[in-house]
Structures are given as C-alpha cells and as structure tokens.
Image 1 (tube, rainbow, N blue to C red):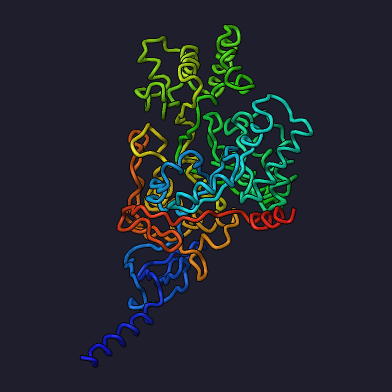
Image 2: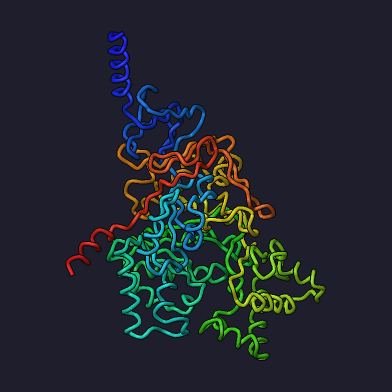
Length: 535
C-alpha cells in the first residue's frame, strides 16, 4: 500500500511538471496578424500570455483546445466604438465578443466620458469581457468649457480645453477624437482643433476624426484632417472612411489617393471602415448646423418661429435636391423612443402612413415634427447613402482597418445598424470567402496588427511569445454575419472560441459570462501619474 501511494505521488508530480501551460491550442492553422501566409502550429498560454508557438504535446496543457480545421488568429481590435453609455449596463459586450472582438477603443466622433479616470474606475469595479481603451472627445471638452456657443473660443477657453485634453491624456487616453458633423464640433475652426491635437501629440496620442462631411465636400474635409495632422505632427485616423453622396459615387479612388499622397509626403494617416453601404447617426444631422446652435431651448425656439422654421425646412430640401434624391426613403428610423412603432420605417414611409402629400417639403416638415415630439432627444437613424463600388475600393486599400462604429447593444431592442453584430464576420464571410475582395491573412491584419500599431497597443494584435493571449478560433468556411437591416439582432456565426487575456469568454460558440478584460491606458498614463505625484 505505501508503495502504491508513492507511485501515485510520483505520477502526480510528473504530471504537474508536464503541465507547463494553463491552456494549449493545438492543430490550428495560425494566421498571426502580420499578413503573412498561415502555418500549422500549437500555441501555449500561461498567466494570460502567449509563451510558446510550435509543436506542444497535449499533456503539457492543463486544458487543451483542439482547433483542427480552424483558423487561430489574434483577437480583433475595433478602433471605432461608442461604449460610454452602453458597456456599463452590458459589460459582457456580447455583440462584439461573438464577432471575434477582444479590444474596443471608445471615445470616438468627438464624444467621450468627461472624466476618463471615472470611466475607467467604473469599468474596473464591474469588470468587462473585452479590453477597453478610450480617447478624449473634442465635443465633450468644448461642451464643458463653452456649452453650445456658436463662436470661436477665447484665448482663456482654448487654454482650458487644452488643459482638459492634457489631463485626459495623463488619465490614459490614447488620443483625441473629433466629430465635426456634430454640435458643437461643427462650429469649431481648424486652428482650434490643431491646438488640442498638439497637446495629444505631446503625450503620444492619435488624432481620430469623423471629418466635417462625407458627402459632396468630402475632399475638402479629408484635406482638413490631413492639415491638422501636418500642423500638429500627430498620427491621423480618419473614421468610417466613405463616400456618402450619390452624385460623387466612385470618388473613393480619388479620396484613397489623397490619403496615399499624404503618406508619401510623410504624414502618418490611416483610415477605418465598416463593410456596409449604409451609415448610422442621429436625425438632427439633417438640419443645418446653425439651427442647432446654443442648445435645445434655442432650437425649439427656432422651430416655433414660423419664418425660421421655414428657412430650416427650405435648406433641408435644397440639400436633399443637391444629393440627387427624390425623397427621404434612404433615411430609416433605427430607434425612436417617443413612438417605437416607427422603428425600421423610412421617413418617406412614415409620411405615406400618415396620409400626407408625397413631396420633399412635407417629409422635411415631418422630420422637424418627429424631433419636437421626442423633445429633441436623440433619434437614431440608418442612412442608405453609399455604393458597393466605393465600399470595395476603400476596403482594398492596404491601410484600411475594419471597425464597427457601434456600441454594446441590447439584444432585440430597436432596429440598430447590423454593423453592431456582424462587422468582422461580414468581412471574413462575404468579402473574403465569397467576393474575394481580400485574402484571409490580409483581412486579419486589418483587424489586428494594423489597429494595434495605430493606437500603440504594444503587446496586442499579433500572435507572438510574450504578447497578451487575445485569440480567436473560427471556421473560415462557415464564419458569417447573422444581422441584416431588416433583422438586425443576430449574432455572428463561426467563432468557436474567443480568448481575452488567456481566458476563454466564447467557448464552443457560447458566451460564458466571464469578464477578463483589461483597461488599456495610453503611454502617458504612468508618466502623468508620476508628474502629478511630484506636484
């Protein structure tokens, strides 16, 4: 009996020594994020890090995942998300994890948390499934300092905005974002933004911009973004790059050329894109920017003044005619809190449903009425404004990343843009497997190492020993998006495992509820903490 116990002890000791890794992924085809060809290898993970890539016996893993006939790749990095109000109540971020996303960058389009310290602290308290990084938003900063003033900042106001950007960078922001189509950013001149971008540049940040327009003046808007990067000496990320006006469909060859020309000049500019021909934003963007000045009460006063209301409506109609559209059929309600029966219907269809005259003036008036009825609360829309030719042209450009422009959605609520569920899977299934617009390895690069490089996430985006073990395991033959415009609530398919910091969150295609995500702060965070401590 003692001899048997001794033998069992020896066997247990040898087994413990043999189990070098917390987890081993075996037999997969590794697409490592570089864009190079896939290769067969096993991956050993210990303490949340990749520790070995090569041939690894199954006995060396405390747990083994068999990835035979599947792709093993770095977890996807979504550089353009909006999480501020949505990840707190839904920390599992299921719509992103099911789509293979392990890292989210929020604070885009000029809108961010006012205090990044408080935002990060709240996420640390609850825990989150994906990793999260954040930018500081220009609109957020301008609102805090100037409210909705329709004017240039004073010298004191500019200095205060720059101080807030500096504070945010020290709190861990990875850059500065603008939303130059939204209030109050739409009223800011280029010089104001250059001043803020210089502060972000000083702390190693990126300048990410929803440019001033994506329609007929898109070339001018791109030129402004490049000018800001040139003058501030900061890397530029042009958000959801597109051509969103029918009269200039096909101009993507020129707009991509502008980006490439800037790079040849030595200006570090890249872009991101969602793989759809429709955009999504608020209904108020249809109004002329001057009408939105000085806050909601001022807008309501303008709408209640007959002459001003007529002027607003006439400018809306003129803008639509310039876009060569006959009506507002392209504008579809995604979520209207005041009357959810309108969700999924176009402005034209709602106008018809109400038995009104079928003309532009009546439909423009309906838009103003909808905003009044909602008491100017945000009305989310989906706008069908792009061509497939431009989408594919932009996608083929090597410096285009894939990004969703989405938040964490509540399953079954409203009619959101399908990009919230299927951005990466749509690229892999439709544009790689079916349309062959991209090769698999290049598509993965645009979702992993390219965004990691852009936002200086030093240990993410590649499968390398020492890197964080953010990984996805998927079947390239079945991966597909499950969301459509008509039925937008559908999780992506084909991802069997998604790991965040070495911890499986998607297992056998199911979210397990775990929250191993980390808060990824910018490089100025530690330095800023030291500087503050020495004051």
